[in-house]
Length: 551
Ligand SMILES: [Zn+2]
Image 1 (cartoon, rainbow, N blue to C red):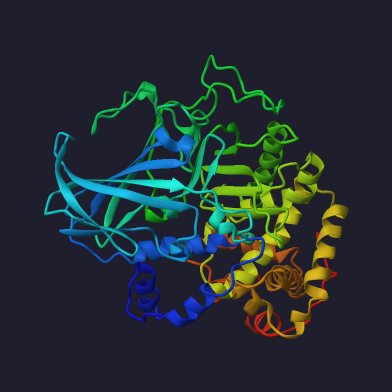
Image 2 (image 1 turned 180 degrees about the horizontal axis):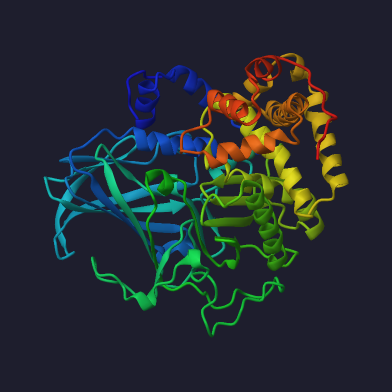
């Protein structure tokens, strides 16, 4: 492994005093054979990496990504990246680095060309394009506006591949599903000031994007010319993806029925807040059934390309109840829009799970048995949906980046998911208690790892095998419950960890959760110094009781 800084990620790790060898050891271990609920932490790291790895530049540049969905039904995206401003003479365009530079993922970018863009938007002289390890290098020859066109093909990853991350970007029925970090090339070097994504949708495919989007109902709008206000609809105000007036509402109770007339106009545009936001995107288009609703100020979208044995409206209602409960717990929504995508699980390897949950930004992807019944959805999948949605607060709004805190982020999220389902009336307290008890007994109490490794160490291992991951999650739940109990006994407060979570959320400033920040929050809420308790019970091997107030 070369020690010379090569990628933005490597530069970032070195700059932050990290150990590259340690990093690669983690990443070159065996493939994860577990239910990957934690891809987000790496997405967040990617996002941070991208953000911090970009050195200062005198003048920030503007980026516009134009996604052409013309070939999406055959699993292909054509993307034009327009970079404007004080461009370097040799501009490196890279995919966000990290685990996703793994070429065995489901995307294949190719056929890059570049040209100057004249002030009137017409094509100018062609520019040189050279392939690099992480992307391409464009010879801009000092021009101030460059159009860089490339194509991304989406390959179906084989079902035997157990690494769920490789299945995130994938063809879907009539279109494709794309993770931002796998499709958006980014300039390395210049500071970025302003990002626009536009979507050209000539066939009126159903499209879901994670941002409140502006909808352009006419075809192409000339550059720098805003569409008339009457043609705009803001998704966050509950309009955009809802059927337009005159369009019959979708009959989602009949699985055989083809989706009704797509309510989405042919063009969308939106502005990710920054590169992190862009990377965190999960976009999906194709033959989708889409239903949406609103909880307070937050729009909830639910989409699928599969015909399930239950009405989509019932699933939306469940998602809405979970969202309402979690928003009630924290006091507000972490984002103005939450997108949940239900997909058929095509991971078929021997050690696969029945259900996988992944979240990126405000999007949640749930992959489950294509023949799942409503009963199984409520009993089993609901906890994964609640878990992934809870990460919108704990993991995203309270950012999870420090592996030392994964025990808390995953443990609390797993525990609170069960409690949120109970509060939402989706699980009975008895059912929730039984599920948690069985899980803690199998994965923590009877786990041979308990006498060999601390919960924090197990959780910190991103690429651990399935047993260690189970131990980490169950151990995290046990640690959180016992910490809550310890704080309650010493303060007389009821459920003090609830208050700690809310405190962390209300006082969030975008900085990642650290052990110090956590201990400070505990101190501010309860007056207790939990450092020694954590050392004894979380950061070193210990045997904690499991049968305490589970629900
Ligand atoms: Zn998780």
